[in-house]
Image 1 (cartoon, rainbow, N blue to C red):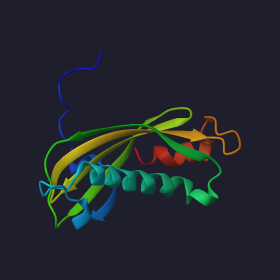
Image 2: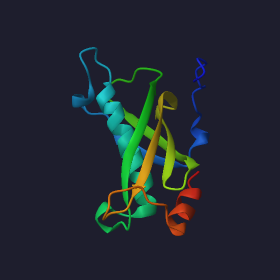
Image 3: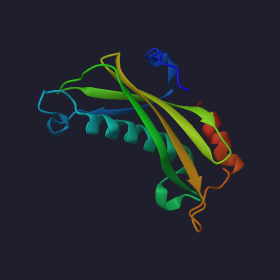
Image 4: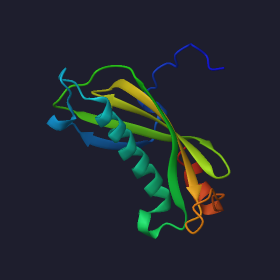
Length: 143
């Protein structure tokens, strides 16, 4: 059973891998703040960059990768115009998966956090496959 206690918001020092994204007018909702769909896309951009930093571009990867789970906690509003700084780190290394912890910061303030599980796949069978040692070593450095 999960605890009902909220996790404290992470600090910028908790992350060493960064992705910057500019807010667009299209990212806003009827209340004038950055909408939940845009926030999900910011986390996706951060995940894509941290994974690509180890595996390279998708067309050249020796193994596939698929998002198996994502959990997002919204902590505060953000408004256009502005920038999102997405901090990412590897929180857990499994045999055939990684867990990525992320947070979005706007002007130094944490507005949300996410945790995602990525499963690595054999490109031919599309079934989970263990990470090669070089891939594991690459993700270990990003924890």
